[in-house]
Length: 184
Ligand SMILES: [Zn+2]
Ligand SMILES: [Zn+2]
Image 1 (tube, rainbow, N blue to C red):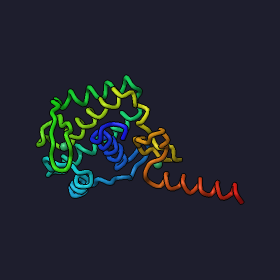
Image 2: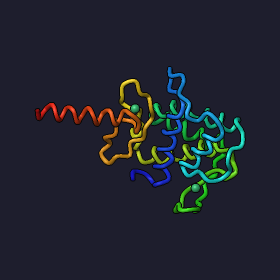
Image 3: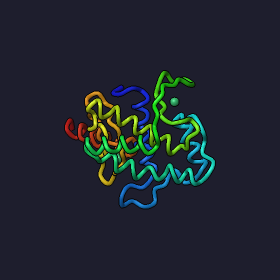
Image 4: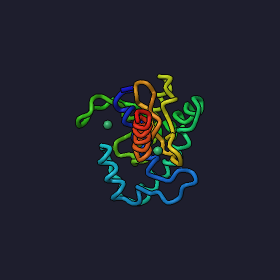
């Protein structure tokens, strides 16, 4: 654990959410096509609170993705601006809460606010933690060829280079082959 548990999860969620949509120059990737897909996504990530009921809410969540990609590439000052903007535009008001299996953590928007707004505020709060800890270099883009997936490096030695998808597997296989070739 690099940050608090809820910040770790928020950052993983933000990267995964961005990765459900196309990267710059990509066209046809869409893992959140409709409301059922978004509801399944909420369940997968343990989102509580109000559930979206319309395609407009799906579109609002999807609209966060290019924003997250853009934020991920910023330097520290840019990230400070991003955090402040996200929190200000959603009128964030942090409070400590405890529910379900989670320990004390922060909600900074009301539980019945639209999902896109709650995600934006969570990301803003997580960025506050990242910046205060001086850990902004943990926001990474996959080093795989032709892969622009976002990732959050939560490894102890900051060694993570590849996304969870095929790139990590491919890199492992390549390393394995290289080792075998070296011993052969
Ligand atoms: Zn919560
Ligand atoms: Zn990748």
